[in-house]
Length: 188
Image 1 (tube, rainbow, N blue to C red):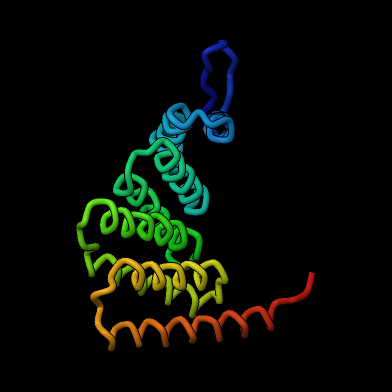
Image 2: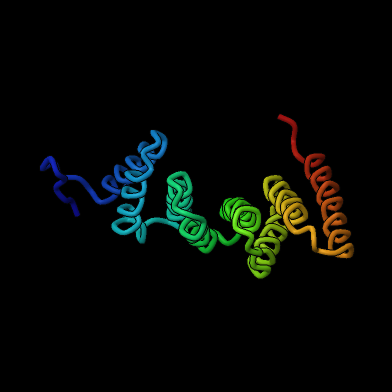
């Protein structure tokens, strides 16, 4: 079904969805994050349901990134990354984005505000990154988990010797896994 756009020109919903998404991407690249958010939300509300999971997840990642760049806070940003993770349960990128924003929040909550980071959130991010490493051998997930562990060690000195030793062992294991993954990658 064709609809008239603001210029009175007939266009298909598929074309309108491409224009809406493109507008959001251009605004994002230009650093106009509020306009990008508006375009991405418009795309999701009008066209998202008709798109495949990959397209929807991409828009949720971009929307989360625009919230992050605009300083909207980790909850709103993480919510978009969670939606992308739900749409692409076997893809590393939503997990990597989520791990990054939660690592930053973990540091801020503890160092700037003196609040402990919720252990259940730490465990969930750790589980998700480990799953992605096991299923995809994703280098970014390995690096994110390493950063996550090092951040945990840095901000929570009161973990105790046993917990610190466990994290140290996990870091060594990650180094070993990364070396093996790199060895299997084709040379460019």
